[in-house]
Image (cartoon, rainbow, N blue to C red):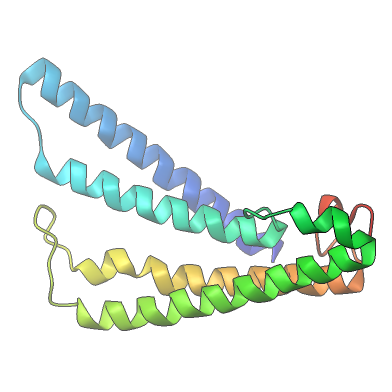
Length: 162
């Protein structure tokens, strides 16, 4: 899983660099030459969407998604492990829902083309089933590490105090 995380991390970095470069190019075109290219806005938007979803999948591997921690203090160490396991199970269910729904959405939009770039909208929406699969796998890995109490499989911060 470490290789997959690193690969996704490199992909997020590449998309971010692409996003920054074309956005900077658009600003230069607009203010220095009083001209802009329509496809840059669209491509940067799509790149940003992909970047966010891929980075969110990596967050599932480390258990760093948003959480309401009010109950953690009240239930103690044993209860905390149960709450974290419940959160991982909920994240797996959410990822499955997003992945399945995204797949269905993609099937509907192969013939819909984006206005500026002309690519099928389904290619942009392909991040949804990819996010669902990656997040489910990473959250499952985190859950297994949490249940085993293995800091190598789940973050040491997550297991601290358990």
